[in-house]
Image (tube, rainbow, N blue to C red; front, side):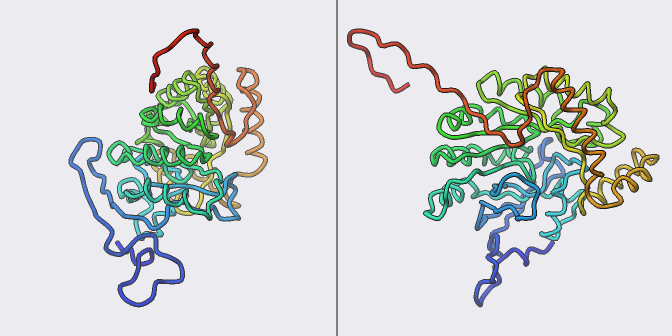
Amino acid sequence: MRWENLTVESGGNPPENPALFGADAVTTRTFDTPEFRGITFHEIRARSIVNRVPGASRMPFEWTVNPYRGCSHACVYCFARKSHSYLDLDTGLGFDSQIVVKVNAPELLRRQLGSRRWQGEHIAMGTNVDCYQRAEGRYQLMPGIIAALHDHANPFSILTKGTLILRDLDLLKQAAAVTEVGISVSVGFTDHELWRTVEPGTPAPERRLDVVRTLNENGIGCGVLMAPVIPFLSDHPSQLRATVRAIAASGATSVTPLVLHLRPGAREWFMSWLEHHHPHLVRRYERLYAEGAYAPKWYQRRITRQVHELAQEYGIGPTHAGMPRRIPQPEPEPAVPGPTQLTLL
């Protein structure tokens, strides 16, 4: 593996584009435990943690924080696979098993939020790889990240497939009391056979919907990103209905459908998977995605219309991608006459 394109060269002046971490800052570890078997962690001390989204991006936000690179969720369609090639790491199995951990992410974020140049813009997390993937169970970076955002009352959102987010429920409630917090859980379909092959490292769809239910029961409005809707595999009207019905039953505040897109890096890996598991669909995919990474507009509009109609039928509120959610402030308790004992809680 080569890290030179992202590290500071020894001697001489620093490069025009600042490195992401120092050349001597990479520590490689493996853990012989069942949940981490076969996974290698590359621990780095990052130089920057708040990233600006390219202007040409379709994303509805400008700033992101990504404490990890690579993802053990191993979703075969993940568009972030291409980013692993920037580290000269494999975008297939390497993306699933070679995880880069920015161990100083919380302290670095706190420093950057405190900078005079920072204007308190919204920060999105989980938009590249999942910040609540299995590695988070060991490295526990998100509590420090959420605490920093809370202390600076900085608005943020999180998109995840991970149930580990419930570990930080109290921190999220504290943050939502002082700033805008948006939470979305990704559930593209409820078909178990499809889930086991296309998202092998993720919690089951019903467990993710349990997360949605728990967050909403605790006053944190949580929507569902119904992504991806996979052509010819999860887009039949009966499948869409089953998925939207399950999402509605979870109490989701909104549902936003997103059709599968196949960017370079992800496209090759997904098509290899498709050829192995569903070879009869290869030619149909080649035709559907002949113009590029995105399915044709007519197909996207059809799926969006169907999901929105089902959402209305099942009583799910309007969809607003990235809509922030806020925990309502509790009503003040009535005054009690006479002396009272002061408390810190």
